[in-house]
Image 1 (cartoon, rainbow, N blue to C red):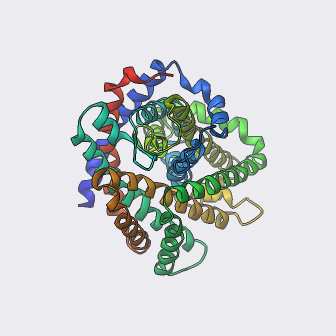
Image 2 (tube, rainbow, N blue to C red; image 1 turned 90 degrees about the vertical axis):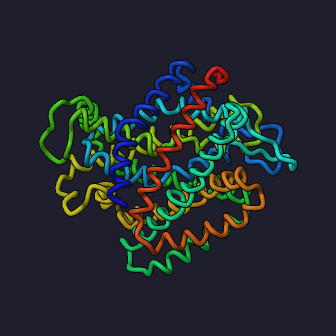
Image 3 (cartoon, rainbow, N blue to C red; image 1 turned 135 degrees about the vertical axis):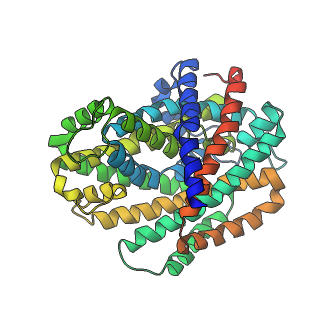
Length: 433
């Protein structure tokens, strides 16, 4: 079954999904006249409170933090390492370009979700691609399909795979029983999850910025250490992105084809622009202005791919140039760990702890996405049961092999793209900047 899943995912993510998402990124960048130029304004809006608070709803910044909680983490750290190892340093260029263009798609999907969001009797808002499909395209069937996929993805990429990553990260520091790790992870996340949407929003607004700035600070310190190789590293990244023949030395597949393939795939996968999950959090914000919240939510892709993936990649490339022997004994997914060994205060163990913290925030952020999917499918009565199942699955993920779960998760994420992008193109005339 695993081999069948891998074959299907290679077909799905190798051409159809990549072409569909790349087309959406390019189209909405052009249609919206390059909304990326408003990034500084969007960042300013994200930290500016709205005058009208709705109490039980998320603030614009909390919605952004919840989105970042679900996306920041192993994709930015381990995923970039793998992309560079296989696709060469040019993969970072294409990953970065994909992030810039993906901001427009994120804006578009968040705009529609805010436009079509639903207000409940308690004055809170819910929304997301499933509501866009139902209210905008008048197709509840596709809404149900999307919600089911989002629910399964929450249990997969958001839950079990993250707790598995926690087990792996902890065991790089010290041998600890997976059962103990699973119980602690489930207990920690459960305290936040059972507190409801405001608890999740409060946790994310406090943890995500702190983690992000701490990780970026470590990367900037390493870049200062490697400053003599910074310009040559940038030059190598750009030149490798368009090189037609593989170059010798340190990197495996440094050609245009491999760099574009793995860089674009990693960029599309890590920021989730086009999958529609960011729109779920955006719709739960207190604002009724789709333009404002879409600009705020668009910055999630900026921070996730344009900043986090870029600094991670630069650290890896400059470290390999400065210390080529340092990568011996490290696999393709551990080039970041090799670079972090040069930190004077903990190095690789510190990176492992950061991965644990990022994985916990991802657990909590994705729990919120799954919660909204459950509410759409079964109403509020199913939320408590979902929370309990989710917490149990955190423990299960920490103790079981995850290869099969990863395969199903990749498949489900690929399926989610199609109804979401269909809605974007069908309702494109309603999206404004």
